[in-house]
Length: 227
Image (cartoon, rainbow, N blue to C red; front, top):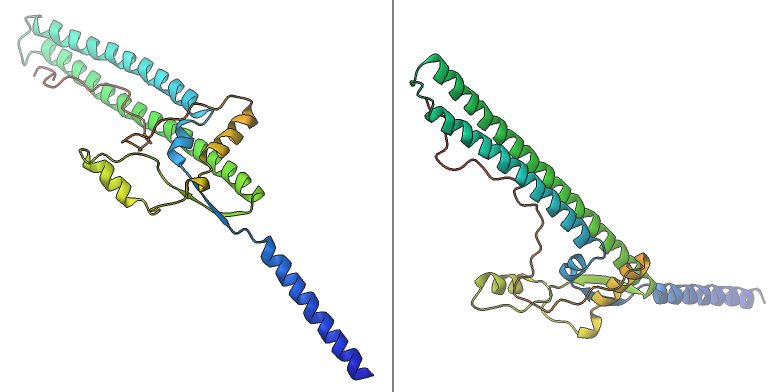
């Protein structure tokens, strides 16, 4: 009798373990998907607005530096037409002032370049972080275990860089039904209550600008204070 009870207990324990393991196995995500991160960044509901605002700041700063550059050039022209002899006290004082203006110009320009690069980097960081969070939400709700990035573009043999970029992609082929780019984009836009931006046609240049361009021109070549 005791033997039978022991057998029943063991059998019940094995059955429970089996059912538990089966349930755990079924709960594990087992699907894969693909997204075009470049498309998600370009069409992110906030990315273009932030980039446009940054570009506006850069253009304003470029105008500021152009004005300063013209002022330095005017000083040089005035010194050249002053009739002061090189080596004289008056000439040297004016030349030193121009040189200081150039140094201040270059120092301020470099500081602004770094500031704009950091602002652009923050925009890229925030955008990509939001994209990853939305992908995680979408994938978790649909039992997707892995999402791979694949740039959708047409390589052009006449542009070797595009061929190299296409060959460098780790994912060689996938079923188009695995592409969840548009679904993730819609989720991001729906959350903000904005329409989904139109889809961009595949092109030959998938790269995204990740750093800001220089906000100011350097002094024209050959413009150096007279000595």
